[in-house]
Length: 246
View 1: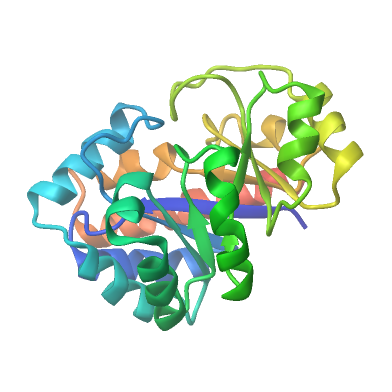
View 2: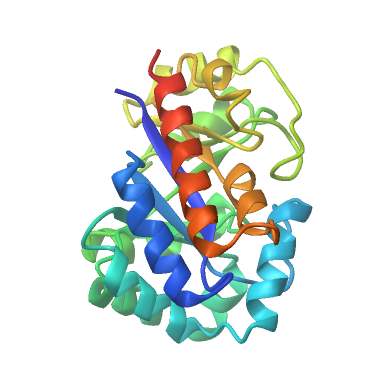
């Protein structure tokens, strides 16, 4: 069974909605939830997630909201915090590790933290039984892949193309998937540009997919009320989960 990881932006359109949406995604068959930490400069994200980040911040999002929501969500679904390094740097990794432990969260996804800068934090994460997810891009060499995956935890985030989330580009990932699996048994999940149309193709040769922009696009649809958004996203999650496991 291939896994589905879903990203949603914490606090948009409201914190209560985030909790309700997360629990609905768990019921829809999502295996892991990425709770996005709204940030003013989400460099790896496309315009859809960037817009949701901005709206959450304009709505008054604070880090305490992330911790509060996580305590209600994490008992029901494997939960990770996805955020940029700036807040981790300013508050301190010790602070986030302690908050994660209190919230029941299982690790972090920090897309702008390269391997070399992540290494000092890996022992801290292991000691706390938390995972720091590693990224691999199609441009990485075999030597670089081997270096990255040597101590990879939980799963490896394979970026489907060089660029930003949601842009829908396409690259042949089979060679790099082969290279990764030569060096590790850690599951490989593909992210960037995964939606109901591309999921089946992108899931070939990997252990799961990561979906963000396709869900957040529905979050941003102001023609839908909150109940309709939850229903539509849940149905989409079920459809994608079914397609990747055909």
